[in-house]
Length: 320
Image (spheres, rainbow, N blue to C red):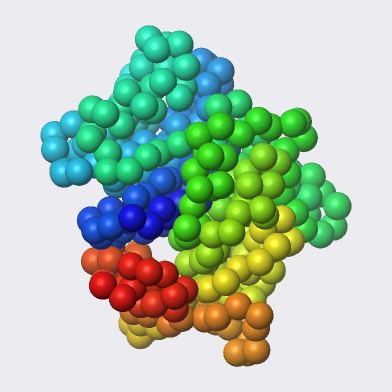
């Protein structure tokens, strides 16, 4: 049994987990950021003084053993156009808030909901603190709040917390015992790195003997990675304390021209690597699917390609 830890947040991490959850002989642990402060998550966080739960909800649904009525309603969102105190709220967020109140802890709520959904593997928040992500831009501007950072359309120098953040002991233990640590897929500065910069998690990653793999984003993100190459993505993760990446997985799919134009209109471009001379290996795989002129990582392609990753890392399971 190979222990695989996936660090991130957002829809990209969920896509990876959907692809990995049905692979035999691996145990999955998802470590998820709780720095989200926008939308329904932000409103509940402010009102109830609890960590951001939106990414946690997405991950639990992704790892649910089967698509049941419960897993489907977890992502139900009340109509924002209606005049209601529930307008815009996500039902799963409300359930997690209620479970937090009932159990007395956010970790208890995540544990209980994971049992209800029959989650395959483990889901741990990176922290149970109520935390605010900050960004220092290249011009010295300081931006507070995860949801505010991409709005400034500025070049990010670093992201950080202005208070000491305590990691969950479960996350640290999972990293310490991992055989493989996967970073991504997701927003570089607001989904992946917010986990990495928590001191105890950072130390656990640096001292871990696990192979470290980064699933590189297919497209740049306005407000975070304009003009970035693949190398810039890896360098940002290393700069924030990971120190070394063993393998980078990049998408090699041919992207339809209308999809590329759609992203270009939004100020986004395809992520390419500037050269091939790196101290990390690069593995190209077909990973993407296209729907409504949008790019998503295909959980089927992720699953099909994982054996090749194990072979590249020389993991024992690869020989089966």
